[in-house]
Image (tube, rainbow, N blue to C red; front, top):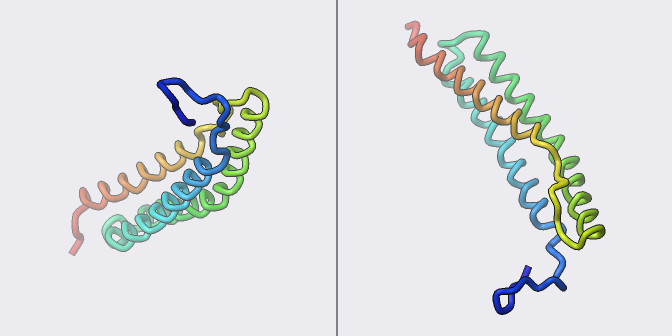
Length: 126
């Protein structure tokens, strides 16, 4: 939106795609970081924490792959919600995709942290 003299210029329509594209790129980076962090944690703690750590890290890698697959669908839903709101009301409303994906990322991060804490508590078996 542009502002002139402290007032909002209603003739301008908000950008319909850049926000969703930036968000999709951020989700891609997040999924890649989850996968890389899981691999690093696995490399560092697998010999200490055993099969449970390997299973947890493998699960987080699978979650990262699923996130990469879901990004495109979330991007399409976001852009269509913005487009639909702009066409109906001339502004962007709150009809955006839900918060399940951020909750999954948070849970995956907690799993990785728990594996690392478990490995530290178990110490080096050598």
